Image (cartoon, rainbow, N blue to C red):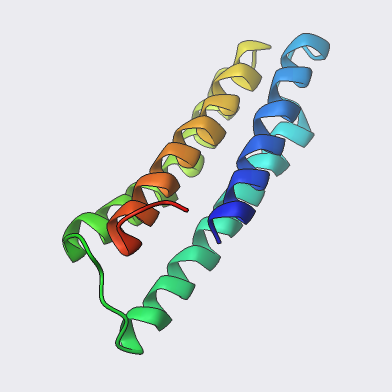
Length: 118
């Protein structure tokens, strides 16, 4: 799941950076890239829930793990709302930071779950 997240987040960052240079308002492709990150996080959360219900143990604290997931799930939604309010070219750039932040958060989730990200 980590490698899939890395690809989704990386593509989202790339799309948002290109749209920052090309568009002067929030681009649909940037918004779709946020939706892709949100879908990935939902799938990650479901996957983690099934694994934990199946008896897989977490190396770190469970509250920290689920706190990271919930925070990561709220991030794309909050930035989307912000981008709809601030309809400038820079909203594309702000949307790119979601991919970067979620990548770091998923890396940390893997450390909490397995003890290492890879």
